[in-house]
Length: 410
Image (cartoon, rainbow, N blue to C red; front, top):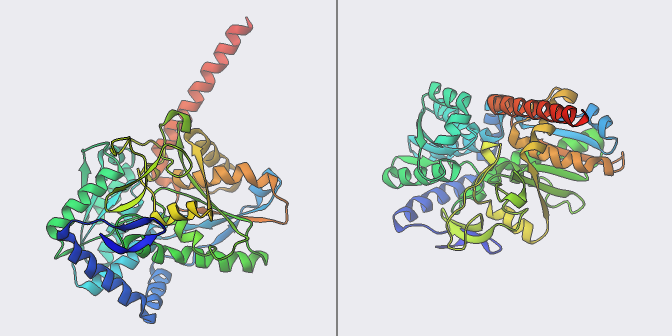
């Protein structure tokens, strides 16, 4: 276990001896790059020329009028190349892989956006690429699987355990142990052993830096609140990083409430009482686990939010009360997505729609001079089949209810 890489009591690097040298090499490459002013300039240039940065901050005028409270602005990470914030991290790690002289990358993915981004990065840099994805997620995210394969990546369907994100992470680590001389694991979120939480947050901080400049330019003031969904924590840490030092800005992370916190069919680690502190997958944080330390099954309509753990940085920010955590149910998420599409013509991913849910609950209670920012971490194209099924299910339930009411009336 390394002593560095802690955020309060959370984090660390709980590693098998065989991986210690690989992590030392990775950390040394990252610290050297971070100390080199030209590296960040090269990174910004790459993201500007290849990935459409800076992404816009869009005033959601119709939603603002609909709720009648604070002005709503949306940070448009859906317009980032590959359709989500994930490209920020993978392109940065791609530059590190090139510095380390390796030629193969592996990654885990849940919703598929990180997998597509990694496959895209591998195609651009000329790396071999393998993506591990739970079999459940392969089935519900077919469009992203299609594009990963077209980009030249090998997509491995993981059938162990719950066949979701945590199992994909386990398989990726097994691969890395076998091929560490030639391979770098491009972990997709701000979790895992040190230095991954720091590395991912470093590259994702470009989102918060941009958002802070943009909201000041457009409104002349800092936002009252910033909302972001929370799976592992990469998009939340990205946008929150820009405002952490601004004590007047409240930061709100929104987790997957699934079928409701009372049902235990959810993935809320920090917004529920179901999680406890433990060590798994190389780091210490809050996990949804039983009394024996075995990881429990999670549930979310959004494939990218059903992870069993959470960023150790966010766990510490919760303990220090710098970030408030809430949860949104599947039904609330689908409703928020529908309203956003109809009012603004924006199509947020199901993951991002969790942040919209909480903002919609609160924005009408704030004065009109206030500003809130919602991080639209990805676009909803990938969710078309899941969303269609949800809408059809709601329509069927409404039909049954209508018939039942008509029957009772007679």
